[in-house]
Length: 72
Image (cartoon, rainbow, N blue to C red; front, side, top):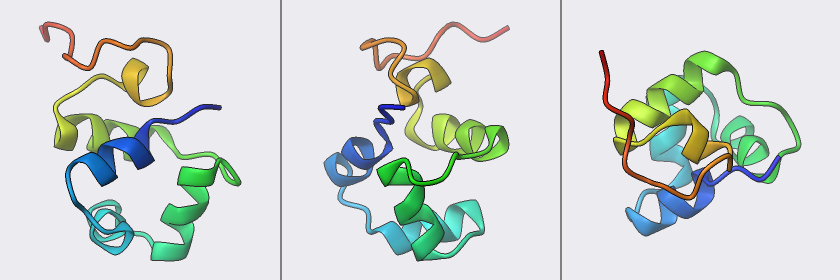
């Protein structure tokens, strides 16, 4: 899966350890999410989408539209 979480993190000048803390995981686990070595869980994707103000579709590479959908 072509996750965009690394690009978002770097574009926003965050360290892996900072995002790992947000997700309540280790830096090593977060690094493995970025490389696709392990699958990121849906709860973490939701946290990241909210944090970066984007959609899960954007995070997982299903769209190039960074702007989130209208929420109901």
